[in-house]
Length: 194
Image (spheres, rainbow, N blue to C red):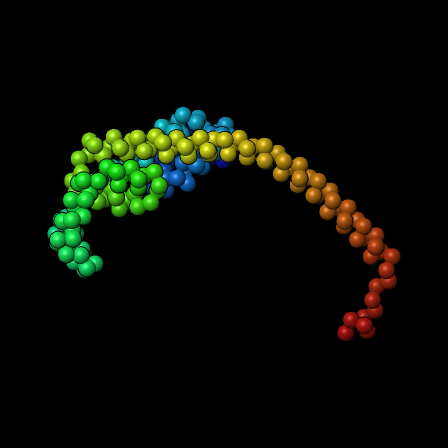
């Protein structure tokens, strides 16, 4: 964590990259750092939300610009026929925004839902509004939880230091008593050892 203090503004660039790769874990880590006073909580919120939206845009674009022929070939290998794919496409057009919202808020299948939205040409303007709303709730909740966890960790760390000192003293007393107890005993002779 000392590295964050040395990095200054670059810590937010690093956070952006980490959130893009692994969103929730990196967001929580950034929020804990904000709770410990190393980062600005609003900065963490803004950077995490922007990075998650950039990642969402990437996955949507991957689906949007994916070659249809390759996808049909893959779908046939998976046992899906064109009729089933057409039905899925219709469902995605009808319920795509609800699917995206549920996938983002529950963190389940968000990447496949984004790729499917891109493949089925769900309008990006509508999708980005849903994704931004879900992102505000999800990332805001993660940052809030991590921020308060960071405050608790600071108190917890102080408690651990006290517990470590007390434990060290008790262990030292135990060693002294053990040494005194062993000092009064005669050493076993070499014949009994072999």
